[in-house]
Image 1 (cartoon, rainbow, N blue to C red):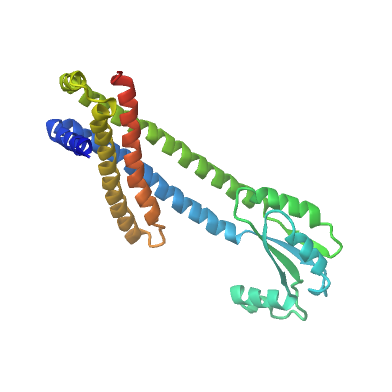
Image 2 (cartoon, rainbow, N blue to C red):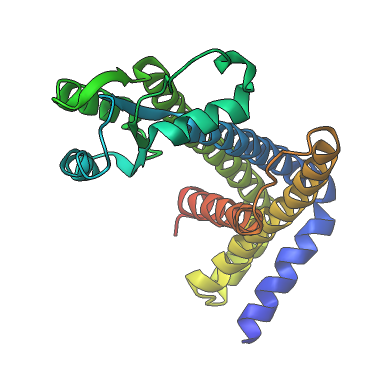
Length: 285
């Protein structure tokens, strides 16, 4: 316990001994974490917008006039069993007419003696990266069914949305990796500087029999504290940006609380990793 208190004291005292370097290190890491958080915020809202568009993408099989739900039951069950299908719904001709009137008004149907809308089967697709392939597969498999008169298949839209989802996911991962390397490098150099400045005291501790962990612990805690402070500052900045953006774009999705907490913990993790790298590389004994 005494060794832990000593390590904590040494870690905090180095903040004052090297206040300017510590300040630059924390600010630099905070900026990196804010950029990561901002990118996550943009990515989250982009994926939300893509998800909203995906919910509007439906595959619709228009059936022959007079087809009832009982007639189409086997086709409905077959479609339900296909990969990428979220839900299947039978729409009567009367319901299709009502939906059209609700959206466009009754004037467009004036003068028609019969209902121009056929019954149909609407297929809601799973909101994953295989949406485009699901549309192609369903269209190819069921478009020639004896009950199907016509098919509405948004193939191009589905493929575009799936591609956008993939790109968003890949960019988020790559950017996170870049910032991980950058933050770790900053911490590594900061701890390296601390080790070089305290070289004499380290040698004295070695001579009096201090263990390896006793010597290393203050530097490890220093990196961890740097990272946690940077992560906390980044959290505060991102919260402010999120609140400000909400006034301009009320529909913006804020970064969820678990993600904010993860940013703080991620900062601490970056600090610890950088310290470990520096200790292994520059404190060889």
